[in-house]
Image 1 (spheres, one colour):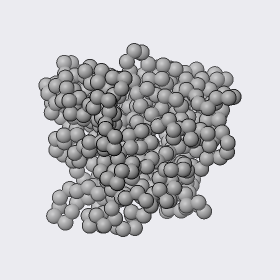
Image 2 (cartoon, one colour; image 1 turned 120 degrees about the horizontal axis):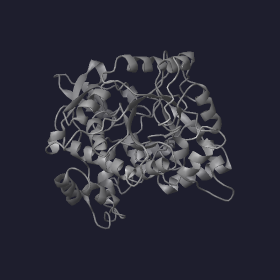
Image 3 (spheres, helix red, strand yellow; image 1 turned 30 degrees about the vertical axis):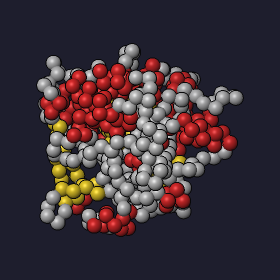
Image 4 (cartoon, helix red, strand yellow; image 1 turned 90 degrees about the horizontal axis):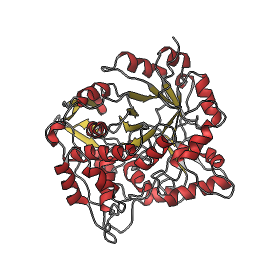
Amino acid sequence: MHPVVDKSWPRLIQGGMGVAISNWRLARAVSLAGGLGVVSGTGIDTVLVRRLQDGDEDGHIRRALAESPWPVLARDITARYFRPGGRGAGEPYVRLPTWNAGVRSPRAALAMMGGFVECWLAKRGHAGRIGVNLLTKAPLPNLPVLYGAMSAGIDVVLMGAGIPREVPEALDRMADHQAAALRGEGVGGTRFDITFDPEWNGPAQAGPLQRPPFFPVIGAHSLALLMDRKTPGGVEGFVVETAQSGGHSAPPRGAKHLNPDGEPIYGPRDEVDWQVMRDLGKPFYIAGGYGSRRGLAEALARGAQGVQVGTLFAYCEESGMAPPLRERVLAAVRTGPVNVRTDPDASPTGFPFKVVGVEGTLSEPAIYAARPRRCDLGYLREAYTDSKGRLRFRCAAEPVQGYVAKGGRAEDTVGRKCLCNGLMATAGFAQRIQNGDVEPPILTSGDAIHETRNLMAPGHTAYTARDVVQYLLAGSGAGV
């Protein structure tokens, strides 16, 4: 069977980088340039309320809230969180209530509205396609974020860092405004239901919503086979992500081995059989190390629809990365090599996570050691069952004593970093903590970070999303 190359899909998908790096401005810019723009839905409830607390200077967030299908909820969120002129000097962000599974969490409404606002802003004023990206490893907010995104007319859903087999059926149900559920998995065989009912926020909207195509982000052809054959509701395509991608990567298959730098070693079992991908007969994109003209040509030769590119877009002007951090990395790229390390311990999830070595960030041992351990956002917590059979959550980046008291092993906390707070800080939403300090950032990148040199014209220190699209497609004959 030949691969399906659907001319309605572009050759380039922008990576769905969280937290808020793939914001609505970046996704919109990529779509306007002819690619598929993608917004990150990870942590979008916190991003929404922090933007409002920072004053929403240009009014975009309040404008999108006013366009939502939930006017009462929009007014309540605005009244509760909006600070004209922003927060006062030294004032911390308001902390949101903790997420819970299987119950009507007060954060579900914020997650739903966050998904709507980000996607509505990304889609306004043009006919290009916009996708939303979520993490299976951060499951509790996913259903309300997806419903909010669907209410804004999102065009495709992408989800990785796990096996999201139940998502297509949930999309089918939410398109008809019906309650949906996902099956959560924790440690020690813990299983739990994650539910969301659109009617929690008022009567159903008039008429069904568009059910967007679903593209799982996978790291192995065997997972593509599983998703294709045993996913209720079906999948419409795939993103195949290699270990060279930024952010979370699938761990190597088989026994764990590290190279002299302490990075996980990937072997033959982790290689993708491209013939299997072609034989599935569905469009697929390749991500991780393909963010170059040569990479795009190689992907097309393997039968791919195109490539997903994250790193080059992460450092462009429209990305949500705090400008001082972006400028610092690009300056380092121009003058010499930048260290990107696949850290097997950084993420509380246990998945390898790529960390860029940048002064003043959690990549520095002294910065990491000086930060008091805490877990006050909780997106990457793991579920467990306590001695009384109750569902509980813990995080390997929380205080060690607390983690051990919850049944965790002290050795599992070594080197774990608070990615939730670190990535919020990278996007400019650093929380102030009790001693007057702010949460330090953490930067992630794929191995293609040095390709950014080719995007900066002589005498220039920055580039745009359109520059990325034009650079990658120039001379490839691929079109958009």
